[in-house]
Length: 163
Image (cartoon, rainbow, N blue to C red; front, side, top):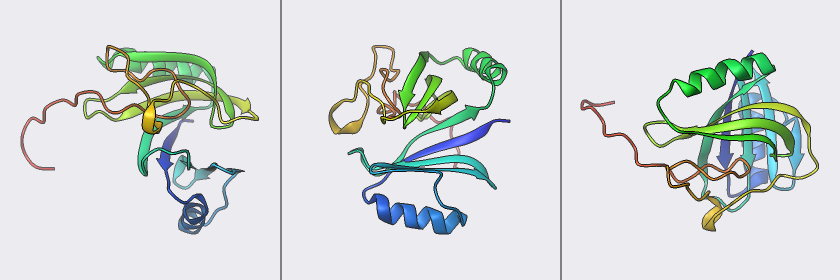
């Protein structure tokens, strides 16, 4: 079963950990000096927060899958989404080893699709640019890095109307 992933950059990890622990009536399943993660079933979400120098706010969204079959299914959907896909493959990110790919939606929101294989001793690495954001490739996709989305690519123009 798939799970929504939300990664939020925070200025004060301890304060944010207290807030989300209270909001969801659950303690994080992973805590590190710069990172915390909740694997919630109600709502079914993988909520991660980190204090790693990125501007505070939602960094990126994602879909976490539980099996290789689900990963293949979602990768198939990504290939039909008419957007460039950055296939990162096997990587270490957010204290976990996983396989992942990235896509940017028409509004410029970065999405990752990933299957976690196990824990890792380090946060991960990658091509972080100044300010904790990823540099973009010439096609507007984020360069490979650990759980840090790019500045959004040029968003699609709204078709009119409000909200």
